[in-house]
Image (cartoon, rainbow, N blue to C red):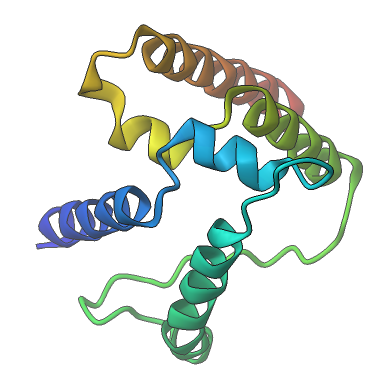
Length: 139
């Protein structure tokens, strides 16, 4: 049941990305072009997503188990550190260069655009490098 629920949540997330225009690199780049032909429509998508997430997130903070009796796994570290800021900067640079981020890239992976395939491969390599470095850091 947990895997089915995760699949359905991912499917709804992907559909939301597609319907909201987050999977269109041109639209994302227009949103990021605040000094030029700025398209603020993705800001409305983000505000809508945050608004929808407020109720379940506040419920999750108050409960130790999910509706399917799985343990809640919310982040506990609330400090801004070099790793968080550095990761955010790298993510932002990649988002600005490609006009796409991981969720939308997976949602449009099989559209036939070779650029998305390169992006996803680079993303997986980055995840592997991070995992390897993190393993050394905690050993």
